[in-house]
Image: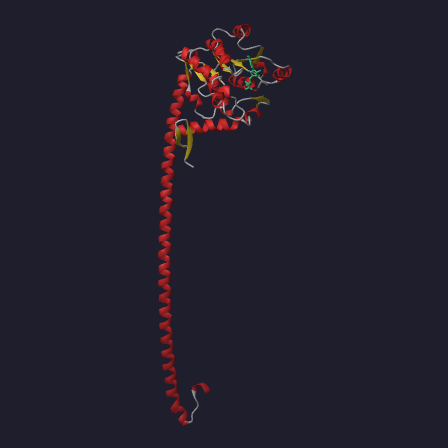
Length: 348
Ligand SMILES: C[S@@+](CC[C@H](N)C(=O)[O-])C[C@H]1O[C@@H](n2cnc3c(N)ncnc32)[C@H](O)[C@@H]1O
């Protein structure tokens, strides 16, 4: 299979599955097809259920390592898996706190997180993330110099996410990120398990409105390179050189290092491909040489057999003629002896 047919409003179109467009389309189709199964609901992180795609969490890990946040503000706790995930990344780095907000945080969730080894890095705040009192509590917990990463994953309506962006994006310094989860809802409006209103009422619409009004933020498409995601274009970066680069040697140098690594990776790959091609060529030559020797040896074996056959035939004829002549000589020699009445030499 090399192409897929796509039916669009203006007619149908054939798309090469190995092109960038084909990969993007297949990634979207993967999300659409899988949405009905909600398989990502059955995933846990360090024993706590988490409602995320693994690809998105790998990208969050990259972001946390790259920007080294002092605080991660998360809206939408659910059972606590993403809070534990972020806390475990901060634990590995050795610095940082997660502030997680949810409308309701059941006692069981509080108990699970309190008993969890990562719990000491998590502060829970109950209430709506867009309530001014909740936002004030969050701000009070954050040092003005702190590097902050924001993850929005609570109420996914356009209005709510739009408001959350206004409340929490100002906490992010230059080169920091706000991540908007579940922007893929707009692609799922007509999928099994989706809703028609998601076509416009979704986090992606809120995010586009926010970007149009805040030119200091941009969507970092590099963070969507894995294809399948619940955050299409949802990694919003605050533009410019910022604290995270200056203090930690940062994001720009990281991107440069990734670029250099890729170039080196390409160089090593092409060197390897060249050496594999050379090995294959030598192998082919050696096989051809062996076959030629085999053929030559078969030919000379046949020749040798023929020579042996001829020699045997000659030997036979020589033997026969000698035997015949010897017999005849004997016969001639024996005749006078017999006639004289003497005994033949063999009879003595
Ligand atoms: C998709 S879940 C969060 C999943 C979680 N981040 C994870 O990955 O495991 C959404 C959560 O947002 C919460 N929520 C809904 N509306 C909210 C609001 N206005 N403020 C804060 N949280 C809200 C819900 O209670 C629910 O627990």
